Length: 182
Image 1 (cartoon, helix red, strand yellow):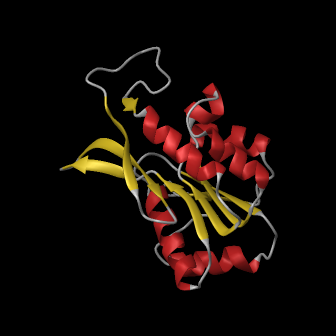
Image 2 (cartoon, rainbow, N blue to C red; image 1 turned 90 degrees about the vertical axis):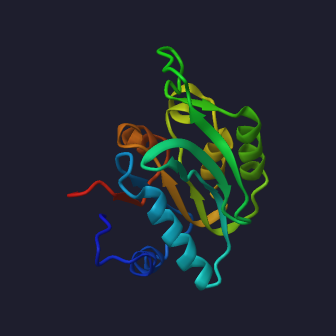
Image 3 (cartoon, rainbow, N blue to C red; image 1 turned 45 degrees about the horizontal axis):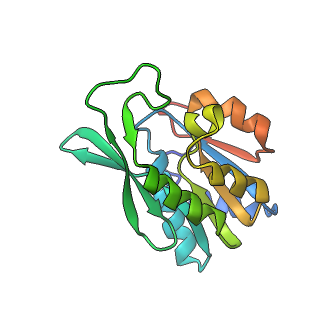
């Protein structure tokens, strides 16, 4: 499935909810800057308009002008945001996050949010990346939340390079590719 300019979040949410499958899992993928987080925010807004209970975490980018300088972690339920990562002064070749320095206290906060998450109509996890899927680090409670299936509709963002791995881990109902032209 590919979102396009005619596919508003409302239309896309209608299509996903019409499937009527319990604990439906949707993977959202695309290159950096392709609109994955924007799509998630739109779906969250639409779900709230419909009175659905939404939980999980977003990882919105932080910009200084046109340069991405950080990544926040946002509690979808409350809107609380904390700075998860900032650009390293220099890339570290052997680090799982070569470009970004992560704040361990914010990772703990995010894991606490996800581990205590009650059932929700829509779960959003933006994103599960190399830390979680390759290194068994990061937002590991995000992986556990998907495994628990305590949601009606789960929206999980993964990078294209990790899509096959995520599909091996879980039965996936829909893949949405935000990459332009797909």
